[in-house]
Every structure is written in structure tokens, then in C-alpha cells.
Image (cartoon, rainbow, N blue to C red; front, side, top):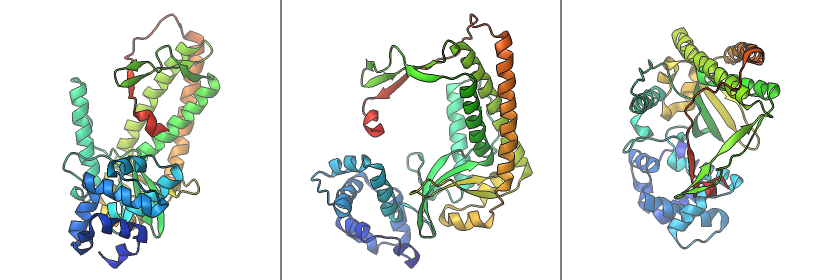
Length: 344
């Protein structure tokens, strides 16, 4: 283990891993890294058992029960837990950990750059869309990173990260602005429907309906039109930003104390190709660009979507016939009964 990584290990993590896998400290750097990104289930359960005792003196006899307890930590405890284990589970200079799913047998080690990961994930998602919809024609790859979660050290500071393309970052701002305006124009809230909470097998029915004081149909139409607009803008922005080829990264501090949070926004696929997971912060800093670029784009697009929503709302008030119901696919949502434990 290199000195640059060793100083990030807390005594608690070292002692816990010595109980679980003492030979770890004699392995090569590559062996330790492969272990950290895919810890065997039995080892992970025992590690949870050891760490819970090290950190909070919680003695749990069963490793499986310890793993369950670790997954149900309070928010402040979960924050400390994430920081403690990151030097083991993360890779590279910053102990970078991508909190996203990988295909069976794959890990972050199979993707040297952000581009390699994102392009692979894009093609996987495209294939899933084709299987779901035989008429789907597919899209060209222009970067698809959108609100991916990660954890890393920025210097000595444990940090939560969100990773997005510039188009996705702007889309979030558009959707938020549109949602706030629609709420202002047509006040509404979700209330339980008649089937909400009904048991179906091992699941609960999730049935929430909109209450808009009698304007539910108008609201539904306005939301649908707005969704179409924002989706089209997102597709156009993906193309525009990729054609501009700025090759830049924007590091936007979105921290809410006591946590440190950074939204890493990438202008285009060229920027993704310049960022290696092992040297994430170093590479992002090397291509960092001024924040006024995405900020200006956000303000321009927010002005457009606000104008669009107001115009559509005015038109619907004049022309909308609530007796004409559009046929739209409604999905039944079922939530596994154990999922509520995680929400708690």
C-alpha cells in the first residue's frame, strides 16, 4: 500500500480488516484494489461486524445481522461509515468510489476513463430500450452521464459527488423551474388513491393521485406538454454541447453542511475521455473551466421554459376541454414490503 493511500486508513478500519482478512496487508497493490472493489459477501458481513464494534462498540454475534444493521445506520452514522470504508473500497489517488451498478463480473477497474464507463452504460441502456420498445430507433452517443453518485477524497476532505453532462445539469434546472411555476399556476399535491397500500403478494401497491382542486386534467396536460418540451431541449443541448467540444469540467459546490458535496459537470464526451478514475481530481482540475459558462446556459434555458409554461397555461385555460381524456399509459407501481425498512 502506497504512503499516499495509507494515511487515509483509520485505526478502526485497519483493526477491523486485520480480524477479517489479515493477509490483505501483504498483497500487491493490484490485489488489494481488486479485493476492495468486489469484497466477498462473507468478508463484507464480517467486516461490518468488526467495524460496528470498533466505531460504536456494538457487539453483534451474527455477521449477517451485522450487515443488516450496517445498512440501517442513522444518517450521521452512515456518513461516518462511508468515510471510514472509502480507503478500502475506492481506487486511485482520491479513493474514488462510483456508487453505480456494474454488469456481472465487471467493476470500475474495467473502465480506465469516465468515457469508457459512460459509453458502455449508454449502449447497455440503449439495448434495454430496444427490448422494451421494438419501434425504438436509438440515439447517437453524445454523453449520457446524469446524476451519477460517487464518493472520494478532495484533498483531505471526504466528499460526496454527483456526475452529470452539462445538458443533464441544465435539464435539472429546467425541470425545477418548470415544476415551481406549475405549482404556482395550478396548486396541487399528491394524496393517497383508493388502492394505496394494498397488499399484492410480497408487495404494497403505490397509488398516489394528484389533487389540483378540480383542475387535475388541465394540470396533467400542462405537465405532459412541459415534459415533451424539456425532453426535446435536453436532446438539443446534448448535441449542442458535444459539437462545441469545450472539453471542460465544471466543479460546482452544492454542499449542505455538515456534508461536502460537489457536482462535477462535464461539457462533452471529449471531457469524459480526459478524466481517469485513478486520477479523478487531478484530471478534472486539468480541464476545469469557469462556472459562468453553465450558469449562463442555465439562466437562458430557465427563461425559455418559464415562457413556454406560461404560454401553454394561458392557451389551455382558453381552449382546454376536460371532457376529452387523452389515453396515456399508466403504470402500476408495486413496492416490496422490505423497501419501507430502507426508507425508514
